[in-house]
Image 1 (cartoon, rainbow, N blue to C red):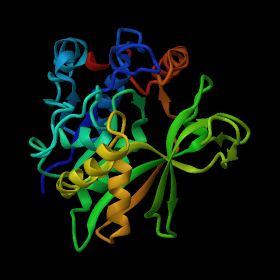
Image 2: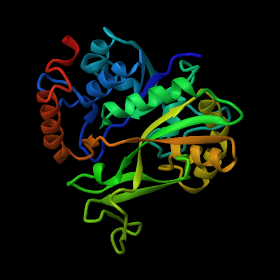
Image 3: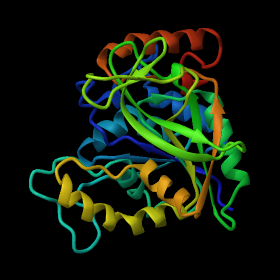
Image 4: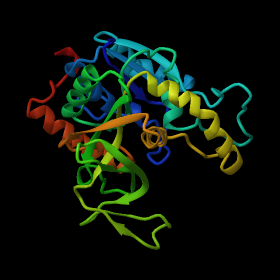
Length: 306
């Protein structure tokens, strides 16, 4: 069995943040959030990282992070292009963005041939998550059903003071396998947290200990094959209903596979607090948290020079 590899989705431009947030330093010596993610992944056992980027940011991305990481890990680059579509399909007029997180994962299909974890570039997940998912992927190849995993976080540990966030709200079985995941795109912090689906006219409360997905998934190669096979059906619907903005989400593919009995997804746990830069106002809190973790000895001050 191949060792698990890490796939990092780094093609987004961060429209709410107002810039290329993946390349915005948060550490004392110019380190990015992605530096800490890769550092945690490497000490959990990952040896290869695949960056999913846009071709136009390649030079900046390599200068900011890729060249540095390549000294300690095997680094590969793949490109998420909106034109990467099945034969017979074309990008509709007015479409400017690629096709979402499942499409980002598919960008890695030519270089990933075994188990892999996939994460967002701009989220800090904490060391525990990488240990959990690396261990699970190493011990659970596909059997009669596909064996996948996700790291679940407590909702209260994943909200920001500076606006709403999108989270996958999870339901699980007594054996801690995912039974359902529902995307809530506007969750705000509160006591308790709450979400809206109608622009704030009405709100629904969520328990602060609700398990949510932060887009940290563990898959075997079978997921890429399934996502590719299901992509045309998604395109048929989206080109008819929302051609300029429709997105092919990872959780939607997972939900289909669970519903068909083809996959089961173990919900792993992390008690770590999430940090991210959804909004530019989030950056000071992330910097303070990283500084505190460094002071406490969780990370060396210069990270890759230790």
